[in-house]
Structures are given as structure tokens and as C-alpha cells.
Image (cartoon, rainbow, N blue to C red; front, side, top):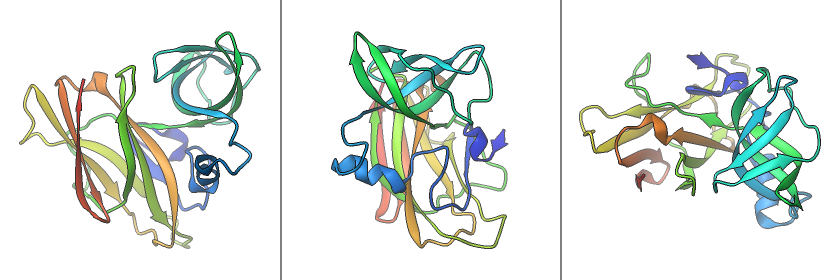
Length: 224
């Protein structure tokens, strides 16, 4: 399934905007990281956010394996399906007793491994800022910085996916490559985004993720 930003699932499409609305961008994340912005006193975590029948968040599971209950009623425009779980970046105030006051919740793309991409494999360079496996060992997470810019071409859309190298993978060691198409977008300024690989979708105990960066090819190994 190929979807634009409103459906950050298997193939993650990125439109031409200076601040992506449904994924974290450099417009706010840099201030948070340096402790200089309005978010500097908040806690930030990647989570699985469950929404109830009313499409309001009613429970949060952190990558550390912890559970958070929601103190305030919170929903977002991108929450379209009731009674489901979304992958997201959470900014919250920890008010104690396992309760979170949600300040913001941004959807994170979940990249399901796939054997091929229509149109062929592309590995246009990007910046890999960090990669890690959560303590719950459910996801490998990638923090990426992409170059983009304004253009009149409505078809200029960046895309991300994760592709299995079927020739080099074995039952015990899955070798995956990050697909990235610049999609005709200019490379004027950067936006930061997160993507998560669900380890339950990979049968092997060892996973290697290879990313083509502006500084060369980088491979990261994770053991489940």
C-alpha cells in the first residue's frame, strides 16, 4: 500500500513542505534537543498510542516497556480510525503515578519489510542521525534528516521504505536496505523525521539495516 503523509505505513511519502505536519521536523526538534525551546522541560518518547471508540488516546506504551495512562483528553486530525494503535512521537508532562499529560503527539512511519518496490530500488542519499532498538525490543528506530525545498512540481514527493536483500539474507540474519527516493525535490534545507521497523515482521534474530548517506553507506546491526 502506497500512501502519502496521511497514511504513514509501508511506504512513507514525504510532500514538499518546510514543516511536515504528521512527522517530527527540524522546525521544532532542534530547539528541543538543545534545551532552548518551549519543549525543553518536556519528556519525549516513541510510543504505541491506543485510541478508543471516540478516537481519543486512552493508553500509551513506551519503547521502554512502560505503560502510561492519559490524564487529559487528546486527539489529533491524523487519528482517523477508532479502536486502533498508532506509532507516534509523544511529548508529555509526567504528572506522576504513571500518568501523562499529552502536549503533542506526532505520527511516526512504520516501515514494513518488503521484497521489492515498484519502479525499482532507489538509495538516494540522506542523513542518518541515529539508529537504535528500543528497550522493549519491538522496533528498530531511525532518526533521519532529509533535504528538501519548495517546487511547483506537485509530483515531487520523497519516499522511504525498507527492502529485504533476499540474496544476502539468511534465516538467522536479515539484511535490509533503506529505500529512499528524492522524488525530484530540491535539496535546499533539511527536515528531521523518524521511522520505525517492527521487529515482529522479521523472523531472523539478527538484523542489519543499510542506509546510503551523504557520507557513504552505513550498516547498523541489531540483535533481537
